[in-house]
Length: 273
Image (tube, rainbow, N blue to C red; front, side, top):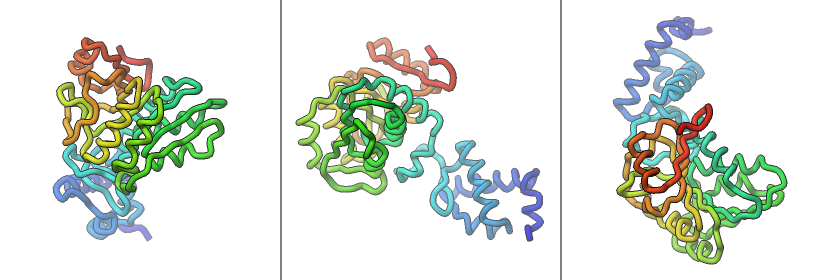
């Protein structure tokens, strides 16, 4: 039988509980479903619904068994969590990026969650001959077995957090392949620092991708702009095209365009100028 608190879960009490849950997670950095259910005398299902609502408002990030704060200074998140952040923006960026890929090309995709959505859209295209070089395990799984698509992976150590392969063993693969386009995500993007990653080992493999490519295409949603992570892997003057969403900062967009870099602002409607 539902508790009294749950009988009001679709009214003001539910919203008040959600506000309190958001405050608790913001203060502690995380919260467990079981602990929150016990605190409010409701079921785990009710708490999961609360967390789903809070995540849709970008106030928390759901994790296995609970949620964590959605602050910009949080530690690196697991791939399965990052995949859900700014999902709508990443889906649109991925679709646009896939449209830039021509039949017969060799492309590089990093292990970013945005590159995953590029791969997912490429998988839907018919009768395409394509070589994809990636250190992303999830990306390789997405494209494996797709007729006409050859997937190449560098050797290296598996990083569970990013579901990626890293290390010096991978550099030789990129040196031996002519890559027409490299699609790379980033943890941070500033004009001064370029594209950067929070982990030096991830940055190393991305440098090899960038060095091997005729064209570098940055795939970065607006939350990455104006931030510099610890390890730069691509200077701004090496970038040819930036794919982002319509919330990217206007001044930075203008500065990039003035420098001759193509910037596409991809929203739910027609592309923003």
